[in-house]
Length: 28
Image 1 (cartoon, one colour):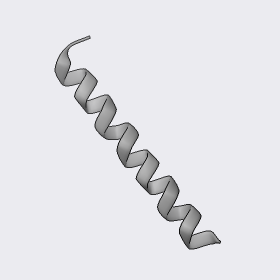
Image 2 (cartoon, rainbow, N blue to C red; image 1 turned 30 degrees about the horizontal axis):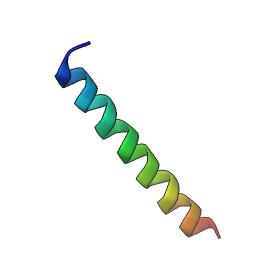
Image 3 (cartoon, helix red, strand yellow; image 1 turned 90 degrees about the horizontal axis):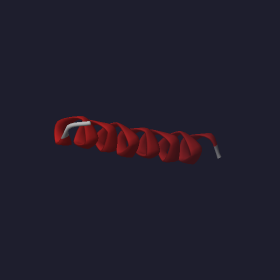
Image 4 (tube, rainbow, N blue to C red; image 1 turned 30 degrees about the vertical axis):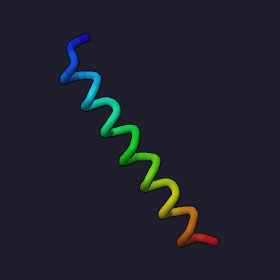
């Protein structure tokens, strides 16, 4: 795994986490 792959994975994880939190805030 290259560093670019790792950073992309981290960015996708953070984005997914943020989207989940936003959805949770909107639904409650």
